[in-house]
Length: 340
Image 1 (tube, helix red, strand yellow):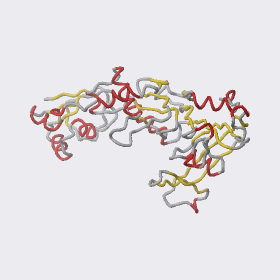
Image 2 (cartoon, rainbow, N blue to C red):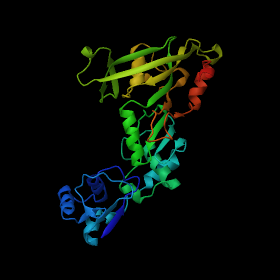
Image 3 (cartoon, rainbow, N blue to C red):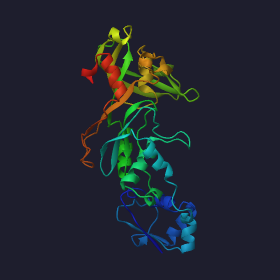
Image 4 (spheres, rainbow, N blue to C red):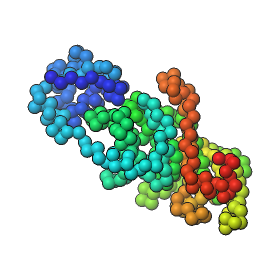
């Protein structure tokens, strides 16, 4: 007989979902057969598999050691965690902004993927697990039933704040408030041209996966049938030109505060480009290479959590990711430093 005590990272999910993770080599029909025959029990009682697990629940599997080894894959041991350790070691510029028992907030530098695109990539997601293994917040064995992960994505060359689920409970909460748009998300960017008044842009966005670009239609009637509705608010924080000694006297630019109401691929970049004010360095959407930029000057600056009694430590909390050095340097060259 094998006994499993449900921890915080297993709680909140259905029993059958948990069993599929714990016994990955067992089929669905086998698991339900074992539940019917009480070869798998929950808190000493017969279970259907639909029950939601709570911390402290006891799951017992009345299998032979041979059967348990076969269906749990224990002979394979736990997964290779070397990529997590490598990411934690190599991506050393990642900064932890906030941490509690359920979530982490990280400041992602330019040039780092949020999630890997291919098996050989090292991404922020691997760094997160490497960090938690390094600090002892999780163990190798716990990764079998729950893997902490990033809950919002940034483009490789967009810097700033990324929220991560440290526990299952935290992941579920972050996913919920992001989906329901109750988490307020704010960015800083510097775009070309002069903008002096607050404005709101709405539209319909279609992604072209072949070119990894998006296009925007202002009216639904002119949009593709699979286009996503988008909404972005912009607030000019400073506007001006470079001093001549920076050899950029022809550049007029605006520092913008941006609130993202919907979070779609390249939304801010494409929205600004669509009105003739592309982001500095954003060549994909018509931006110039002033300051020899090779990437868009866009930074996820802060978030504000909704009021909640379930997570009092997060209720109304504002988490800020300081702008990276190069962003501050360019803002200073444009005399925008006091507005940051």
